[in-house]
Length: 212
Image (cartoon, rainbow, N blue to C red; front, side):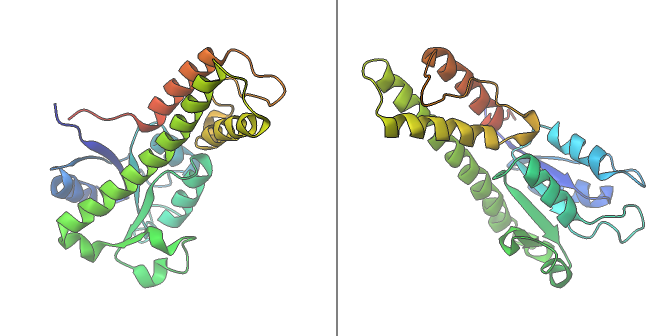
C-alpha cells in the first residue's frame, strides 16, 4: 500500500485549508485545525502536537480577519521549542511582512509559488526526508555502539558519544520531558538491550510512516 506523508496546515481560513488539501492530495494528507475566534496559542499548539504529522505548514498572516491575536511566526517559534529540528514551513502571500518576523528566512515559502505544485511538493518531501535522515542517523549510531558493547567494552569516547546521541534524541521532543528510555551515563552503562528497544520505539514515534 502506498504511503502518504501527513502535513498539518495551520490557517484560520478553512477555504485555504480545503484548497491545499485538494492541490496536495496526490502525495500528502493535509490536516486542518479547529481555529475558532480567540483560540489561545496553547490550545492550538496542543492540537498540532497531538496531530501526529510529518511536517507543519503555517500561514503567516492570521490576524487579518480579527479572528486571532497572533501570526504564524509565533506558532512556528513555539512549536519549534517543543520539537526542535522538526520540519516547519511558514506559508505566506505577504513575504515582505513575514521576512523580518521569522527567525529563519529559509522556512518561508511564498504562496504564489505553489502554482508550481510539483516543485512545492518536492520542497515538502525534502524537508520531511531530511528530518527522517537526521533522526535515523542518531538511531544508527546508537545501535552500532550498543551492538559493539555486547562484545567489547566501549572506550571513554564511544561511551560519551552514546550518551550524547541519546541526549540528542531526548531533545527532539521536549514536550515529552525525559525520553522514554534510560539515558546512559558514562560511569554506569547497564541494560543496553532494553535501552536499544526503548530507543527504537521512540524513534518510530518520531518518524513513523503514514498509510494512504
